Length: 321
Image 1 (cartoon, rainbow, N blue to C red):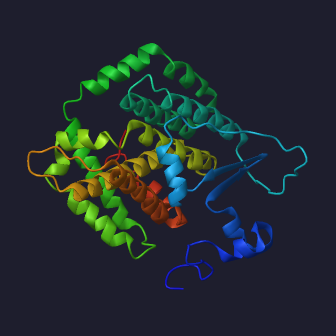
Image 2 (image 1 turned 90 degrees about the horizontal axis):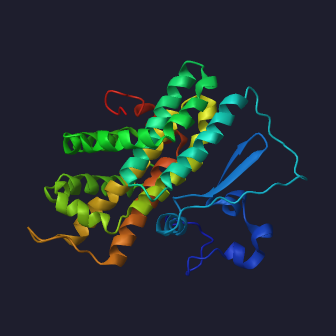
């Protein structure tokens, strides 16, 4: 009714829930959402959906690394049939995801180094998957835990002279991908267009603006987003054999949310030329949360958009390691 559920009260609360209770009155979708479930043989994982504003707040604003609660239910019987499920690949994916989480949550190291290691590891794992050489995957864990390799990554990344040029190119290409996705909500196109216009401004490209932006969109928030996308989608690589593609999807989603937030953070401040932006903290956080749940609703509520974005990111010439 006028774009929202007819059973919402004036206080935006569900009257069915208030009158009948969760078990008696709610449909399956309302009982589950904003929880998200993924099922694998003898394993069911639940997470919160970033598309829910309340869930987005919990995900982005948690200052501590995410913990995952585990439990067993010996009385539950497996009901799904997983025909042709690749158990050896799934075993490697489980070990890999644990390693990725451990790497991303090691806050003793700078975020750029942690993220580089994660993406490179998935790239190298993909080579072994493509060559059907999973028996050689174990050597990756040994190599990537080496202190010498981490130091090599640090030197390699700090020596890149074309960093800013590559960043601009990659961001432009990432935003270009969104033009190929289906539009689910009427408010998305003006929101997206407004962000592109703001990011094309001179202020958006200045080092001063980006440093000020990072004071509120912290490394911890970026880490939480990467963990969220990897937790939700990485195991899906067991079906398409593309752990590198799932990692790219996680990175693209995180970067696009961050850049959407920066665009509207700049618009909210309209800084005087030469002065450092300084938006109120509450406004900044609201902008970041809105960017997260708006983007998630367009991407994650459409299987077509998820598959399409992952497929477009396979172009190594435009989105290479």
